[in-house]
Image (cartoon, rainbow, N blue to C red; front, side, top):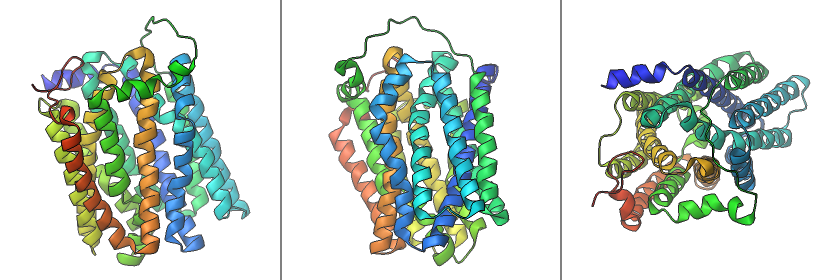
Length: 411
């Protein structure tokens, strides 16, 4: 049965194109992240700047969330996604040109990353909102897991390739990213989606904020989205990786690429399993257990002084996060009407996407104040505390059983 479902999924050519486009764009983004992190730390030697990299990419997610949701429900989502790739390509090209010509300083990098973050703020909810129109609803949970595997494939290959290419100079990394973003834009243009005849509502204050209202009125969705927000905000360690690679593990850019890839190794393994065999039951309990394990992995990474143990901790970190992501995305996409999916996914992306950027700022700020190790340990403990609080605050989420459109919580 699992094999049949997998065969059905791969027979959808548009899904294959979508999968490849997502792999390309996320891989290039991860490559760019390695180059930016190493380059700016080499320029300033200030851990706070590593946190600011995340912060300047966080503001667009908040500022454009309401606009992005409205755009996705009014216009062709493929066009929006393609334009976002072109925007990211132009930003990567600016980083390459600035590096070669010598004018790319700290402030210029932040400005370019802000523009890139704006394109990504529209791209994230668009890619998620596209998926339900690419495959039949019955295949959606497995498609979400397979789509997550695209993300993790990119995170494995992207940072490693970025770390290797950085040996030829950061401009080489940025130029490569430019080409890949353009290729992703072309692939998205060839994705076919099912047309749904739903009346378009006139834009009003009510429709603009409908995504917030819908999530607030559904405790399962509110609990899942907010749990991810606070868990990643506290437990995220990405901003600390350049510090660990250089100052704690005493290695070079190759080690940074390896560490950036490690979470995706665990996440990819989990995503492949879930793409073949969806979670059969007790999804709420599984999600809380995954978040708790995410916090434990952050603690283990914080205490590590060897590359091997750090890699293992980050593999567990990525595997547990992947389980949580698949459950959350399935709940949101299967329990939201198609005509407002763009607005709901924009709100979802505002919270979950900003959690990563804010988490980087939190980690970098605490590292500048107390050191990298205390930053990781405080984050890991905070994640576990949040998990326990949310189990008590959102019993509806804890009782969710099966991941299907009509499935409710366990009585």
